[in-house]
Amino acid sequence: MKIIVAYPSLNSLGGAERLCMHVIKALRKRKYNVTLATLDKTNWVLLRKVFDESFRPDGEFYLLSRIPEIPTLTLRQAFVALSYALELFLITLKGNYDLLVNMGGEIMDSIGDMIYFNAIPLKLMHIYPQIQPRHNVQWRCYSRLYSLLTRVLRSPSNITVTNSKFNKDIIKKNLGRKALVVHPPVDIQKIKSLMKNQNRENIVVTVSRFRSAKGLEIIPKIAKCVENCKFVVIGTADVDSEECLKDIVERIKKLGVQARVRIFVNMSFSLVLEKLFTAKVFLHTQPTEAFGISIVEAMAAGCVPVVPKAGGPWFDILDREQGKYGYAYSNLGEAAEKIDLLMNDERLRSEISRRAFERAKRFDRSFFESEIVDVIHKVAVSKLK
Image 1 (cartoon, rainbow, N blue to C red):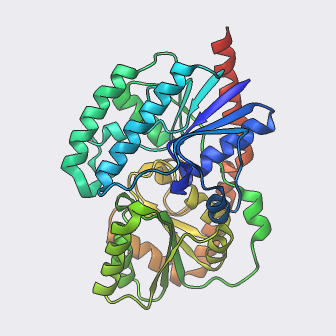
Image 2 (cartoon, rainbow, N blue to C red):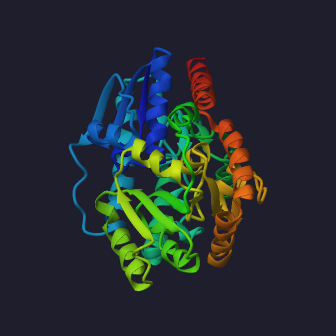
Image 3 (cartoon, rainbow, N blue to C red):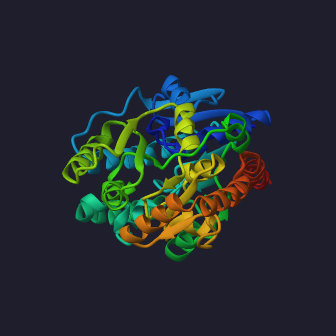
């Protein structure tokens, strides 16, 4: 059976990109013939460096050698969305495949036999403006127009899958579609095997892409409030990250916390793990995060998560239980308070860390692989009837 796995670009180096690679791996392990369809040519060398692994398909198809440089983030992402819709449409016209797995459902949710949502759909930005907080008015107009386009292209026969119960509820409420939940994969065993027996330091780590929607600007403010620890911000960056990086660096200087807040860009996964193995707390900052693979990885590495009291991190990962697997916060002051508590009560931190590690096991990649292949197999059987 020939399966096309489509995604806009793996070169963005985020959790959704890693998830897409795991789908390719899971399908190839079961002897499916897999072709990856993207907008631009995949930089497999960079992926292996940042993710410490890469799972290549049997074949590749892409429209461009690279996505062109476009002056503003709004126009660039509009270009990506429309180009991705065009690519999916062209794939369906050619029809030389048995199954089309669309792994970018949040960008184009109307084409594909199975459609996976990694985040809140872009066409709902007029309802959830915090998805793109910097360019609100532009994005709201674009969101409404894009929503009309996807309605025209909608195929009634596809199966919807998403990464969290949180996102499932949003899809049901706003799109009227039932979605299956398949949580993203985390290589718990690999992290456990690499873990070193070393003392934890008063360090708070954040792992994220450098984007305005990630809420990273609150980190210097929290660092100003919690003086007995250091903050490490590790992120993947591309051409759309310049504004975000510049902003956070300026905030660090303005608040005078340069000595306690350090930024690392495009580190290898092994080096990220080294930072996590020495830290006590993992701080997440995006309130609209649908899941958060880096949070589970941090829990597996022994960190206690402190996350916004919203989104998949609160609903799915912490299971809405305050203080059991980690802490959730509603404002900057509360985040600072929870971090300060964990830094000064080692017995409490150690106990929550133990429970967090056990919780992380529920998201092991073995569960993901079996569940996602099972869904795809059922879709294939249904289509062939």
